[in-house]
Every structure is written in structure tokens, then in C-alpha cells.
Image (cartoon, rainbow over all chains, first blue to last red; front, side, top):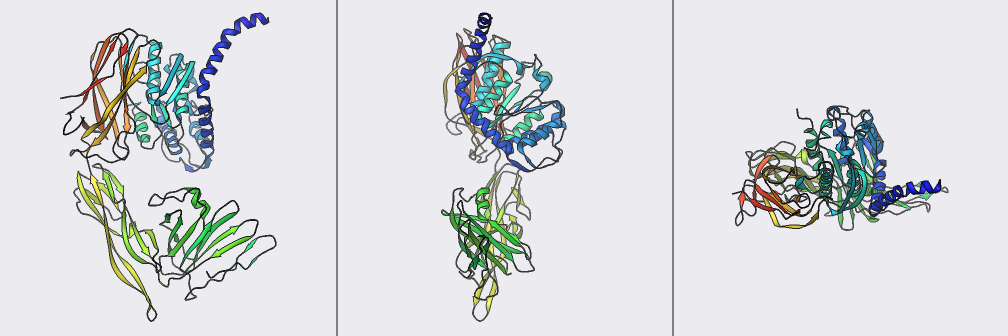
Length: 243
Length: 396
């Protein structure tokens, strides 16, 4: 039995070890960012919400006012048009996040990877969703997070539609340059890793759910968490569902 | 110093019984006292308004050569306010001059004056825990309230786009009999006016609205009081005219100027593709006269149209959005690169346009010696799977 187990487990163990090894270069910085995020989530907020702002607006505002690296992985019409947050007083940032998202049952929040992940569990199970594409191997060396995000899009193109030629004109995000090497990881997890490593940026989906399987549009963008970008992100979100 | 700690009781609870006295033995008017903070020491200023009227207080903390002001401190009738210097330091909130009490500061002085002619008593307690030691200071040497000295408009110069609005503030600098200055927010107490209301208007509370391009002086004026004390007449005041102004510059974005020589370096495309080169370009926003628009947070947006493409399955990702530094320069560069399938030889050309806060702008490499046009023409070329640095030219 041992022999059988050994022969079948070896390739899996090697792949597992490679994944662990590949990620190890970034581990210490990733851990630092996770610690920094967990600290940010314990800070108390005097007052938040209570207005008519939508769930998506409140998430973006909380991210920019509290400098939270955040991933808006899924945005539907309801998140942009409704689900206002009840008035909150004296809660922690983490509690505020959970309350903002709790009003919309199809969304979940996860803060365990050094980034606030706002996602739809249902969308994560959708095989046609670009963000669920498993990238066999993705390596970055000393790149701006904006370039890293576009490079990931290149990798999705290369995987889904081999033979494409892609020209880029991309706004940099600034801050820490990234080096990263991962294997067999879904796109959303790589993006989350980019944001977690960079530490002061947001990535957001820029297309509606029905276009998440469409390679014609650039489906996501990374922006710095510098205050002037808050209105840019809200503007981009506002264009997901043109009126 | 005219106060004393009368006793420390056995349980080390602090008992302060300081006699308050000054020249007139009637009211206390100001204080300038040393504070100290460490693990065992707290410094707390207590201010009590002993009158039936509100009392405005000038307040500053001085440490390490920095003067930190509270400019809106006002006590209600008979209110006692405790100002904990540690909390004030640790809050790290900037004052109107953007100054903060250094987070590591442990010693300094705290000064306060009453601005209105009402009795206010103040006492700084420097309390040493465990040892039960404390210092209690209050001093009061000026017989009159401080005199208005001059007013300052803050910020002294603002850059705006047409349609923008912003708040100006006016600060009254008061000087007491010891020559010590305090500032107090007087935005609502001065008269505001614009030298060129066609360019920018200002309302009675200092709120400036820009209309068209140009420059306008935003004036703040009022009549202040200067106090004099004589042995025979006591304290009396005379009115003095106070006036100062700020400048509102209203500019419209007209150009984005390419800064320096763009750098281009090698870039590795994802597996399956060839190699490439990545170029970084920074732009600065200029007005119609070629002057930089020195505004942080402008929004630069690019758009593109593909004009030629010989590459199979060509794709262009372009929706760059940038903000600007206080010098009107992109905070991050525009990165340009091209990835093609291994071994492919082809080219792609596209036009790149910019808007700044929704104003379409021209592209220039130098208004006097360079090229200026409505957009960039960008050409990417790949030979045998390797893409060159992009060739970027300004449209005629």
C-alpha cells in the first residue's frame, strides 16, 4: 500500500512543493501585509453609513478612507444601485465590512489573504468566468502592479486564446514593485496576491457579470489607494451598467 | 508662578489646592507652561470660563521648534475643559498650518490666552504617577486681552479649474503684552471680496467659485481691536483696519507635455509569447499659455483608436486613468508594450488621445521647440516574436 501511495502521490507532492516554494519568495512580505490588514480591521470607526450610498460605493469609500487593499471581484447591478449600509457607530473596520456585505446575501467577504476580498461564491463556481481560469504558471519580476495586472491578462489571453497579439498602454499603480511566481492558481487569486503584495491598491471588476466570460473587454483594473483615485474607481464602477 | 501643590494624600491621590492670583487678583488671563510626557507622567491643561459669556481661547503647543495651534477653541459659559497633551500629540491631527506635534515629543510648553475680555482660569497639571508628584502652573501677566495684529488668508494662493470651488480661511494673529502670537480662525468674522468676480467669486464665508480663466485677488478685511493699558485709564481698545488677500488662479487644461526622454527596457511576455520592451512616459498638464497647472488630483484619461494592425488576433488594452501630483504631473507613468506569439512578425498602430478632467487636450513634446498635435501616434513592431520599443510621434 505504501508503495502504491508513494508512486501516485509523488507528482502531486512535487507540484505542491513547487507551489509552496514558488510562493515562498513573497511569503514574508505577504505575511507582513496580512498582519497590517488585520491591524487595520481592528481600528474603530466613529460613524459610517446611514445614507443612501450603495453597497459598492460604501465598500470603495471604506477602502479609501481606511487604506484597505481590496478586491471587488464581482459587481452586479444591485450592488451599485442599492443595498445601503445602516448607520454604524463605534464598530471596527472589520465589523463594518461584514455589515456592508451582509445586506447582500449573494456576496461574501474574506480577509484571510492580506486583502479584503469581496466576491460571489456562486461566480467562483462558474467555469466560464475568466477570473476562475487556472493559470498553469505565472511569473513576474520587479514589475509595477498595473503592469503585473496587464501581464496577467496576457497570460489569460495566452491560455484561453493562444496566438493573440496584445498591445498595452497601462497606467502604473506605483508603490512597491512586485516579484511573484505561482503555479496552477486561478486568476482572481493571483490578482488578490498582487494586491496583497503591493499593499496599497484596489482591483475591481470593470464589466458586468454576464461579460465575465468574454475576452473582448478588459475585465478588471488595478488602481492606487491614493484619495484622488476614489472618484476614478467610482466612475469606472458607474460605467459597468450604462444607463 | 502663583500656585502650589498643597498635599499628596497617603493613597497618592493627587490633591491640588493652588491659589490663583494675578496683578488684579480678579481674573487669570494667560499661561505659558512647560509640559512633560513619559511612561509615568501626564500633562493636562484645565481651562475654566468663569463668565456668563462664551470665551474664545488662543492655544498653542511649542515643542522642537514647532508651533501647533488650536484655532477654534471656545469655552461655553462656566465650562471647564481638560486638554490632555498626550491625546493631542497622539491624535496626530494637523493644524491650519499643517503642523503636528511630533509623535515622539516628550517636552515642550503650552500657551493659552483668552481672546475675549472675560475671566478665564487655566492650570496645567504635570502629574507624575506612582511618585505622587505634580506640578501645577498658572500665570497671568497681561492686564488686557491680546491685540489683533494681522490677518492671514489660507491658502495664500489656489489653482482652480473653471467651475471648481474651494474654501479659503482667514486667521487672526493676536499678540499679547509679552509679544507672544496666537492665531484664531476668523473666517466667518471678516468681509470677503474678489478683485475680479468675472474670474472668481467669493461668498461671505470665504467660499470661492471659479468661473473663467484668469486671476483674481480674494480679499479678507475687517476692523480689529488694539489694546492699551495705562495705570490711570486701565485697559482700553482702539479699532485698527486689518486686510490681506489670497490669489485664485483659474486655468483650463490645454496640453499634456511629455517629460524627459521616455525610458525603454526589456520585458518578458507570458509563456508562449516572445519578448518585448516596455516604455514609461510621464506627462504634465499645461494651460493655454504653456504654464503647468499645479493641482494635485487632476484626472487624466486616455482613449485610443486602432489605425493599422497586421497581427493575427490583435488586441489593444488601453483604458489608462491617472491622477496628478501637486505639480500637475502624472503620479505614475503610462507603460507601453507589445506581446506577440513566438516567431510572429507584424505591427500595430494606434492613436492615443488624452482628456484632463474631461477637457480634450493636445499632446506636446515642447511648446517652443517640440511637436504639438491633437494626439500621439503609437506604432508597435515585432520581428520574429520580439517586439521593439514603441515608436511614438505627435500627430501633425
